[in-house]
Image (cartoon, rainbow, N blue to C red; front, side, top):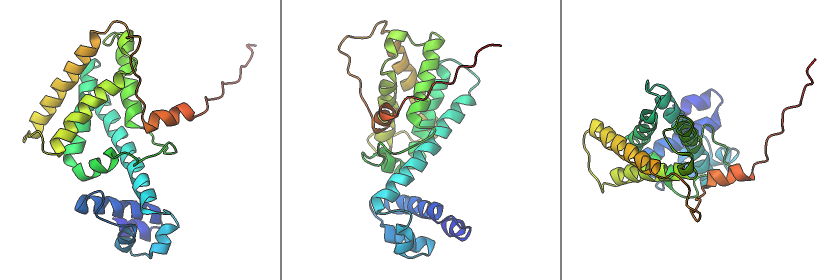
Length: 229
């Protein structure tokens, strides 16, 4: 795939493909930019034209993977016929299943520093989750008082199960059983949040690289007002 993309003129995409293959073969750290270049069939100097370092390639690959995951989460929820908490459970199942199916790549993007405040990822999994929790608040499934920071509570639960599974600290062999456990976890977390009717005055508000980027981004310009005729 990598060489095919290169022959079609997409060297950057070919290097990303090669890096992703190397991650699956050797893990997050067991390869170099030179090896990715060799897989594509170009010199390291050609690769440096697109990525100034291995870290830059890792960051770009993480951005691609996270956007792919964001689409997967959103598409899975949109395919769910129920419009209540079942959508959030579907999001959790998709996240954990993705990590279990592709643990080496998941570990790559789970690492701190894989993306930066300059990383533009769309759709970002965080935004997909935030949008769904906003919807649950609008439909009355999540109290407005529990909404601030709820994405970090839900993500911590889902992500924690994913890491426990791929690190071998928890063993669930059947994929369907993994989905059932994830659904139980998500619904239990949502039920716990539903007990919060008002925000605690000193509740901490976590941040991530992505939320810091959003905070640094300038507010969109208001649409021009057109007087009515």
